[in-house]
Amino acid sequence: MKSRRKFIQLSAAAAVLSIIPDELLAKAGTFIPKGKPKQPIVLSTWRFGMEANAAAWEVLKNNGRALDAVEAGVRVPEGDPKERSVGYGGRPDRDGRVTLDACIMDEFSNIGSVACLEHIKHPISVARAVMEKTPHVMLVGDGALQFALSQGFQKENLLVEESEREWKEWLKTSEYKPIANIENHDTIGMIALDAQGNLSGACTTSGMAFKMHGRVGDSPIIGAGLYVDNEVGAATATGHGEEVIRTVGSHLVVELMRQGRSPESACKEAVERIVKLVQRRGKSLKDIQIGFIALNKRGEYGAYCLQSGFNYAVYDQEAGNRLIDADYFLK
Image (tube, rainbow, N blue to C red; front, side, top):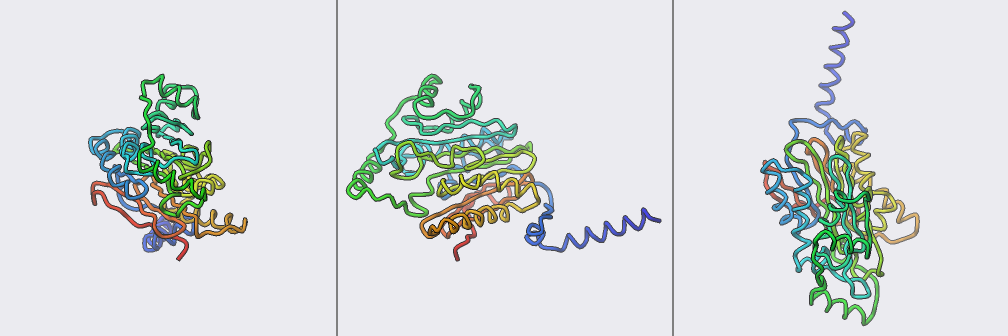
């Protein structure tokens, strides 16, 4: 009799949960994913994520590994001289030098990272080489360049004419006031779930335009710009890197998903924590942009940002490749 009564109680509780909106469950810390897992799927930041997703999808649709997909995807904007915040064509620092940051993380928590790397068009591939061919997780500056050259990467001039022209114009005033959504997003972050149910992520950038030489933001820092936990989900960040570093933002998003939050709810909480820290320091929010995207183990995804203007690309079998405007804090 007790077993029957307990069964009825559990059935009733499940029925109640089934009619409560997912977002309310997420706020209560009891988010319960529904339906069949959606995989493969890939997400990436900003409009250039559309082309990056298309390249990643070529790997995923053929049952390829998420790690290979995210590397292939972010190499697209890295190699495009028209994209002014990633790789070749990226805006230089205040000394006129293009310095690149990148990191990559797979389903086994293997990680590789490079920072302040010059002359190499695809820092994400150097980061993967650091992960797979060295006992370290991060190489920086000249050491990263020496390693890249030893692995067969070609040394190139990454400063394109348009970026050089902008830099010379900037030198006339030397005012460091990056424009939100233009000069201070500077990143493509990509996270993917493959057909085997495994997650990986990549993040790559040329950093803030006209930054101090040697400045490193959140993008190459595991836990800040990118984090992957194959039991839970993955997240990546874009925007003002200094603020993301303060909260170890991407790790925070993944941990919130571990606690039961939906991907969007987790991203929102991470943004709200950054808002509190900025306001506590008496700083203005209007010139700052922060955006997070997240993907959980079941293929559910979401995003949230500080102010309007941030969008992200999603590619899956059901709906194809599309660009989505993220919800935001400053209404």
